[in-house]
Image 1 (cartoon, rainbow, N blue to C red):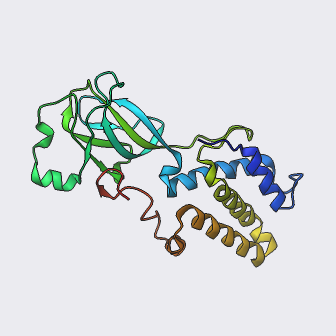
Image 2 (tube, rainbow, N blue to C red):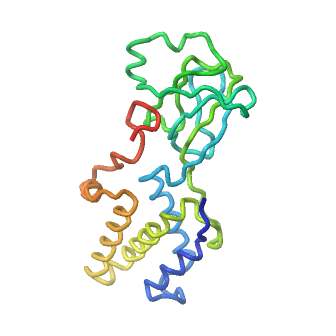
Image 3 (cartoon, rainbow, N blue to C red):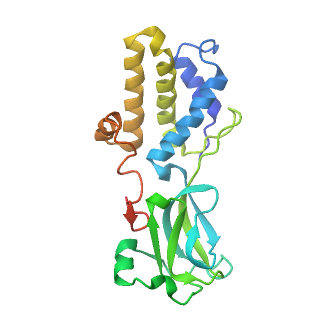
Length: 233
């Protein structure tokens, strides 16, 4: 649970920038970068904003992640017909193998308590269940929240407190990037160093920096497999 406020991180950024009066970098500007930092952390490490919730299934195989979420992390167990009673665990399987071994699985008789969940990261806000749901059962799921922007800096951050140093590094990266065209290569080098520090803190993987720099895009180890078991990384 997060307890650190945006004000705390913004004050640290202003101190490091030797701009405690916020002449060169306004507090509103720093708040915008703090909000970007939250998204950057969660994009690389979805579990930084993970939450458990009980959701009622809709009829059929396809189920949607709760609206506040952007990525499913795991389907844990059935929760009865009222969302209060913990039931059987849900098995996670590779959807491609399931399609090949049981191609008519979507036509199975709907049930209240499902046995299996399948997830494809290219369809991040939904997953499939087997047998199809009859619309009366509930599931306990783990998913990553889409960080909500801090409207005011005094609000609590939307990721775990332990990621606040990484958020500070990201804000410094953005601040130094802004000044780089005017302050020469030193500012550009500082921006790069802060970005590397941010990536290393969040991922713990130095090779990620090279992949990002070479334009390879999203991290390969930040979430579930492209297609496979729910929650696999």
